[in-house]
Image (cartoon, rainbow, N blue to C red):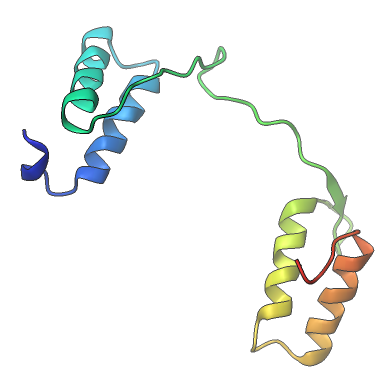
Length: 111
Protein backbone atom coordinates (compact mmCIF):
# COMPACT_ATOMS: atom_id res chain seq x y z
CA UNK A 1 0.00 0.00 0.00
CA UNK A 2 1.53 3.37 -0.91
CA UNK A 3 2.23 5.70 1.97
CA UNK A 4 -0.40 8.22 0.84
CA UNK A 5 -3.13 5.54 0.96
CA UNK A 6 -2.42 4.67 4.59
CA UNK A 7 -4.94 6.07 7.08
CA UNK A 8 -2.14 7.03 9.49
CA UNK A 9 1.42 6.72 8.15
CA UNK A 10 2.93 7.39 11.58
CA UNK A 11 1.22 4.37 13.11
CA UNK A 12 2.12 2.25 10.10
CA UNK A 13 5.78 3.22 10.40
CA UNK A 14 5.78 2.51 14.15
CA UNK A 15 4.29 -0.92 13.53
CA UNK A 16 6.99 -1.86 11.04
CA UNK A 17 9.69 -0.69 13.44
CA UNK A 18 8.14 -2.70 16.26
CA UNK A 19 8.10 -5.79 14.04
CA UNK A 20 11.85 -5.48 13.52
CA UNK A 21 12.52 -5.65 17.25
CA UNK A 22 9.97 -8.32 18.13
CA UNK A 23 11.65 -11.72 18.63
CA UNK A 24 8.39 -13.50 17.71
CA UNK A 25 8.32 -12.03 14.19
CA UNK A 26 9.78 -14.24 11.47
CA UNK A 27 12.74 -13.25 9.32
CA UNK A 28 10.66 -12.90 6.14
CA UNK A 29 8.29 -10.47 7.90
CA UNK A 30 11.26 -8.51 9.22
CA UNK A 31 12.72 -8.30 5.73
CA UNK A 32 9.37 -6.99 4.42
CA UNK A 33 9.27 -4.39 7.23
CA UNK A 34 12.82 -3.26 6.38
CA UNK A 35 11.89 -2.92 2.72
CA UNK A 36 8.73 -0.90 3.44
CA UNK A 37 10.55 1.38 5.87
CA UNK A 38 13.29 2.08 3.33
CA UNK A 39 11.00 2.47 0.30
CA UNK A 40 8.02 4.33 1.73
CA UNK A 41 9.44 6.14 4.73
CA UNK A 42 13.06 6.68 3.72
CA UNK A 43 14.30 5.14 6.97
CA UNK A 44 17.62 3.38 7.19
CA UNK A 45 16.99 0.52 9.56
CA UNK A 46 19.38 -0.49 12.33
CA UNK A 47 18.06 -3.31 14.47
CA UNK A 48 18.63 -3.20 18.20
CA UNK A 49 20.06 -6.28 19.81
CA UNK A 50 17.74 -7.18 22.66
CA UNK A 51 19.02 -9.13 25.68
CA UNK A 52 17.79 -12.65 26.36
CA UNK A 53 14.16 -12.46 27.44
CA UNK A 54 13.28 -9.78 24.90
CA UNK A 55 13.28 -6.69 27.12
CA UNK A 56 16.02 -4.18 27.69
CA UNK A 57 16.82 -3.49 31.29
CA UNK A 58 17.30 0.09 32.41
CA UNK A 59 19.67 0.71 35.27
CA UNK A 60 17.87 0.92 38.60
CA UNK A 61 16.91 4.45 39.61
CA UNK A 62 17.73 6.02 42.93
CA UNK A 63 15.01 5.62 45.54
CA UNK A 64 13.84 7.87 48.36
CA UNK A 65 11.72 7.26 51.43
CA UNK A 66 8.03 7.84 50.70
CA UNK A 67 5.62 9.63 53.02
CA UNK A 68 4.10 6.29 54.05
CA UNK A 69 7.42 4.58 54.68
CA UNK A 70 7.87 2.79 51.34
CA UNK A 71 10.61 3.32 48.79
CA UNK A 72 9.79 5.60 45.84
CA UNK A 73 11.63 6.36 42.61
CA UNK A 74 13.42 9.67 43.19
CA UNK A 75 12.76 10.97 39.66
CA UNK A 76 9.04 10.27 39.98
CA UNK A 77 8.91 12.01 43.36
CA UNK A 78 10.66 15.09 41.94
CA UNK A 79 8.30 15.20 38.95
CA UNK A 80 5.30 15.04 41.26
CA UNK A 81 6.66 17.81 43.48
CA UNK A 82 7.34 20.04 40.48
CA UNK A 83 3.81 19.43 39.25
CA UNK A 84 2.44 20.32 42.70
CA UNK A 85 4.39 23.59 42.63
CA UNK A 86 2.78 24.60 39.33
CA UNK A 87 -0.74 23.35 40.04
CA UNK A 88 -2.95 26.43 40.43
CA UNK A 89 -5.59 24.45 42.33
CA UNK A 90 -3.02 23.63 45.01
CA UNK A 91 -2.89 25.94 48.05
CA UNK A 92 0.02 28.34 48.56
CA UNK A 93 1.01 26.26 51.57
CA UNK A 94 0.98 23.08 49.45
CA UNK A 95 3.12 24.69 46.73
CA UNK A 96 5.58 25.97 49.34
CA UNK A 97 5.74 22.52 50.95
CA UNK A 98 6.55 20.96 47.56
CA UNK A 99 9.27 23.58 47.02
CA UNK A 100 10.90 22.75 50.38
CA UNK A 101 10.76 19.00 49.71
CA UNK A 102 12.46 19.51 46.34
CA UNK A 103 15.20 21.51 48.04
CA UNK A 104 15.61 18.70 50.60
CA UNK A 105 16.17 16.29 47.69
CA UNK A 106 18.94 18.55 46.39
CA UNK A 107 16.92 19.79 43.42
CA UNK A 108 16.64 23.44 42.40
CA UNK A 109 12.88 24.18 42.40
CA UNK A 110 13.31 26.75 39.61
CA UNK A 111 14.53 24.16 37.06
